[in-house]
Length: 593
Image 1 (cartoon, rainbow, N blue to C red):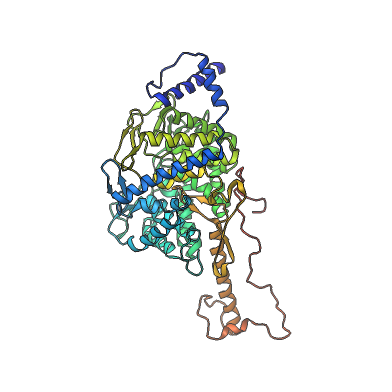
Image 2: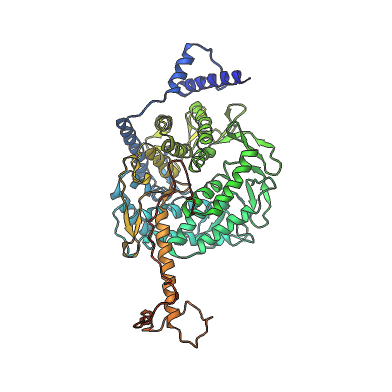
């Protein structure tokens, strides 16, 4: 049986190659086995080794793709959210925020265009207004341009050469814009459980008729952005609501440790009980792992490891991950969804390289069969699912996984995927006005839409895959690193590496969170110390520590001649520099953490 399985696998791989280049054969066809089979397999076994010149050339191709799409948006669609590439005009989709422009902002810097980054960042400060009567997706507004994109741009402002406020990264206009946008989302979290509604009106709050049913990812995909906001601004509100939502969701898991797909945020009852790692759930698991890395948080890591144990027990079959009933573990949908392609990258972050590589090869085989990832792929039938044949130019999850795996293994197979993606998009999706979503991968029909994540995710990950020395990789293989000074007095080292990408590929710098948190903590310690030393003996110990300090009382900090301090000083200065703890092999926590 094993021989037959391997034989059929080899046949399928040969068939995939033919499909990729000719598009003339049906997926269920089998071709005769000739010597050609062994030639193709031998070619596969020895992946092409890309030279520095080839990688540089591919980076230039990716840049050209970006500017073709970016300039088409500016010329034909701005200030609308998205470009319609077939009719060369624009449309609002997620709230009228010029979404594509904000989503592409940090990609400009990744490509090295400091001048345009500065121009756009300044323009956005003058044009974006969140006091509008618009119903916005809480999830999309958070992860895409509005909160995630603005936070990332704020943290990259020094590298882009922008004029900075004193105390950056703990203050700045882009940070205030991100905070304003996030505050517009807070009414959605005012539920009996703390799990947010899916939609909020930016001017009026949550509608009385808003449905309480939202997807799992819509509940659990806030901790990266909201914790970053809290740590940078000193306002704990955002992190608190994100953690409350996560803990409420954690309590709803089934007896076998799984969560479903859609939940009633008021009653905590599961409306859709399919459990898996794909659409509607995916970024929840992603944020548990990346949140653990960004915040060095054991609670989030524990949650994910418990979920992962159940996922491996009930949903994994031959390194595919199926959909199962959350209470029974029985298979409900034996399909692969394109959004699941983030999973090998997540496994690699935790050091599970063997499993990551095997799962990635399964997903790559689907890519090679169609020249893209269909939204749904039937694993038993080996073909697309009816009415789910679309491909919205989102190979980003698979390319993100390829980026992590290439950095962990050095295997150039992952570079080959990137080149395949470039050639496929250029050949099938390019139009005179940008790049179009593929409505049907079987016949390459196009749809009149270019979503913002094409510039935010797909292009960025493609470029980073072929740019191992990019600053987001911490200097890469060359060992050349760069950094910026930040915080009050410039005592913080920022931008030296260890960036964590949110689910829209917006990079966040953990060092900035540490810098501003330490800054806020030390200010509070100073306030406490000043207040305790300024009180008279008769004052109550219960008096608020946040009272205003009397004029001139700060001089009481000084010790009198010959006086010894009885207790260690409350103030402490960090002497251990920030280190990125995300190693090449994925180790997250040090033994002492």
